[in-house]
Amino acid sequence: MLKLNNNEKIEDLGDKELKIIQARDSYRFSVDSILLLNFIRVKNYEKIIDLGTGSGIIPLLLFGKRKGLSIYGIEIQKDLADMARRSVELNKLQNYITIIQEDFRNLKNIFKNQQFDVVISNPPYISLGQGKVNPSSSRAIARHEIKGDLEDIISVSNYLLKNKGRIYLIYKSSKLVKLIITLKKYSIEPKVVKFIHPRQGESANLVLLEGVKKGKEELKIEDPIFQY
Image 1 (cartoon, rainbow, N blue to C red):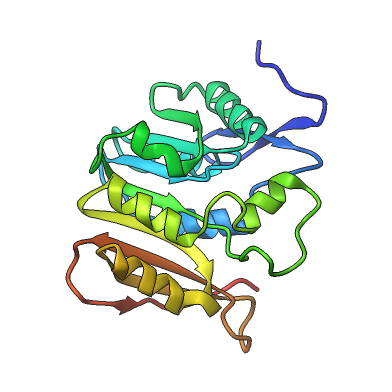
Image 2 (image 1 turned 60 degrees about the horizontal axis):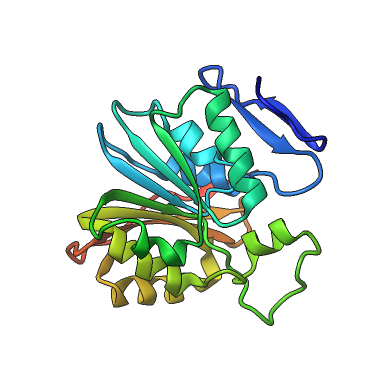
């Protein structure tokens, strides 16, 4: 029988009867994950890796979008990785989704290079020494560059991706230039950008980006999203 910790509950995801285990008083997936999920384009039988999977929300909802997907979720925090793994078991998806508790900076010791068709990441966007650190360690790691920065993520993505493989990211729009410069440094060409605005009449605060490893220089700006 599936074990729940005292601070956990099972929530219905409202998608093909999928469910997820969530903590009541610590890290919970945010709207950023859903925005990123809806932006991702996958093909049948692709091998996908989610860096910083948190509760496992993206692998869970991504499964079933195409046939034969093989999805890996990487999470450094033991409690979150355990919770994500139990959510996979709850939905009987162990044959399709693998949760690994590991620092993504160590993935070169686990996977051979050029193994993946798609890399997904919702990177922390607050540099160390900037902003107030959340007292919740799980939330702090999700938002602050405590366990790796943007360049670490892009560097390992370059290692993991096959040539012409794709990366999907959501990031602060104010740091888009930094994101593009870092991607190009590691031979990943920005291909699609989509800005996210809190509401009409307000500046964008987030940006979705698709990049292609060793892709041609051609950038498409898609219609923006207004959240409210």
